[in-house]
Length: 404
Ligand code: ADP
Ligand code: MG
Image (cartoon, rainbow, N blue to C red):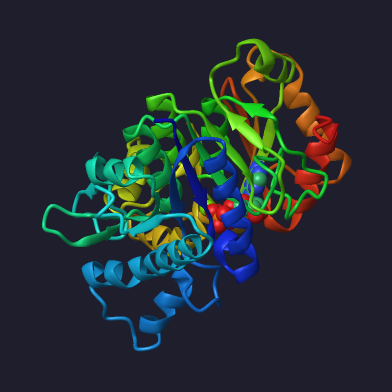
């Protein structure tokens, strides 16, 4: 049995018209001879009746006393509705189909409500449905705990459902259908010239996803990478095949990857830069700062420690508490809110001189000041102010000829 997993995101199932497109993609691949597992997200985005954020809004209005377990029950409904509706449409168009919750598809998780980890996938029931010729439509973003409770997998959870099922079923391919034509060289909401990448390696896309490219969740890529299941990211609203994610750089794929230094640009906004100056006679200052952050589970990034002090970033939503803690510890931190981290990413920049120079050049030409920078062998990060971010993204995109 050749198995294909097709995951459809929120906008892909948000309207009747979009769902008709979804049916076409399922039909076509069935005719190509695949046994098909469909994974669906909740319908639409914030404001749509059954979108995840809308469901959350139902309890927020009442002050939100809902415990994590019951919150997961509420959130899980969005995907269950999608799965049942799509299953009905498939049957109506003559395609035998069954709808499954995450639990009935065999996704077993820990008890970490809100961000549960998949412990095991037991695909036997799913396989029986496939063997009987049915399309299995699985509610994404959810699993079941050993106690039998519904759990949700956290942000990007439906991507994770898709690759976890792909790995467990040894699928030939996992297709991630979304509202853009693949993984682009930058977020098209900020860079209209951004172009789809025909082929990327798992490491590159994992890196882009971790640095903020929200088109696919990094955990989903990691699972696919471990199981060596190829991924394709493509649009529900076109017939183009989008981006292939694979480490198989043989023949046809090789030339795409080898010749570029920079693959893409990602960004994260809503960041605060914190600067703490060293205090005479307090040699343990750096240690104290970072121990304090760790004790309060504040995630830190962009860390720069020198004899004269420490410079680092936190998310804006952690900034207030971080400032308070530092003051309590006797420091006088300086905070700059509203910053954005831009990542210039490429497996091919390793050992290439001049990449940083071109980044500085691109930003200087636009009069944008770089507040901090760091680099690894595959990524260069720069911190800029939020209000400079869009211009910076476009300038960098142009400087590295990513539109070509
Ligand atoms: P879905 O609901 O299908 O999971 P998402 O909203 O999670 O869709 O992801 C798709 C969105 O990701 C796109 O609409 C796009 O704005 C955004 N995005 C950010 N960076 C990139 C990138 N490098 N390539 C493609 N899309 C990106
Ligand atoms: Mg998504």
